[in-house]
View: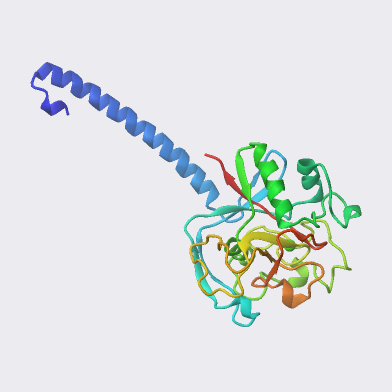
Length: 274
Ligand SMILES: [Ca+2]
């Protein structure tokens, strides 16, 4: 420290250098903090959209808490429990489309391949989804991609709502009553309050969690639930083949990780690389 230097002039000079250095550091830290704050502020508005180099759009889901599950749904939706997210995250605004899958994987496995490039990819297994994500991440486009976990998915689906649906079901989702036995281009129905489309129906969506028959012992910090009773994975949101009860926000399904269904696709979470 400058006070510890016996020579007054030396002390004064070093003190001046120290102060200058300190001021510089303060400015630097301030600039970094300002930049960080600006970025955080821009991100803190629910539904703020970012777009990657491939044109995939992601909406900001804010930090917060919600009640996960339903007391009047299936047994596997209980017990209802509070989950808290310390940080927000970016959720895909749409189900991954057939054209997006084609560009990354070089194929289109979808049953409804004549539906158009903006229709959701389906007939992809959970394993296939991991291959897609691996290749997408290899593009190193500034984001790290992954499947959402169950808690993230339901929190994002509800977007602050507490009922069976995040709004009027017929306005928001494709299911047995209105889907005409097929998938539909993503984003045609009404988005939820955080700008996410087709969370109810169209294609059901793989999440990263392993199967569990209920929420006993489920994590409450917004993390994924690790392996438990089988290798099956969960899927959420229901599909064009599901009735209204099975496209609820809290509805849960599971399937073997290597199964390919004509009504199951994916949605991604994007994390900015530091
Ligand atoms: Ca869906």
